[in-house]
Image 1 (cartoon, rainbow, N blue to C red):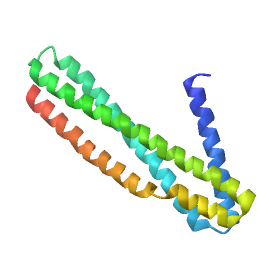
Image 2 (tube, one colour):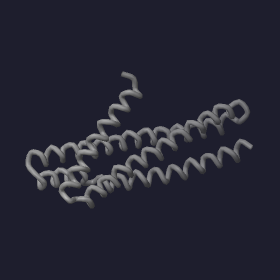
Image 3 (cartoon, one colour):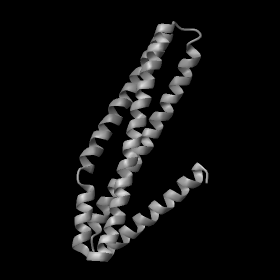
Image 4 (cartoon, helix red, strand yellow):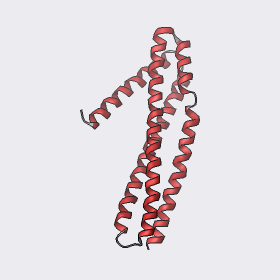
Length: 165
């Protein structure tokens, strides 16, 4: 199975887990909790999308810098390449951590459904509370990272333009 097929299969499995959990919450008249969980899930997906854009921009910067190496002083382009490489490493690290958060959300949803089937609503609520503990503060830190590094990318682009003109 190729990567695209694996991603499609994983996406479908995730969708099924979320659907089951949302239906269960709805059946239990827990619409507010359902909405809160989905907001958190969408927030993570949105951050992953932002990070993908950042990664694409960094790759574009690397490609432009590679072209500029021929006509610009080596020290300038090397320094900028190092900065871009550092940002790419940070972005890759954050991408892994966001995937872990998303996986934790998926596991929490699946465990909550199982807990409800085995022990009822109270057990499900305990699983959800335990699974979500700490995620909001972690996500706030990741959002701050994205905002800071988005500014860093803009500044790096400006420096690159002024130094290479």
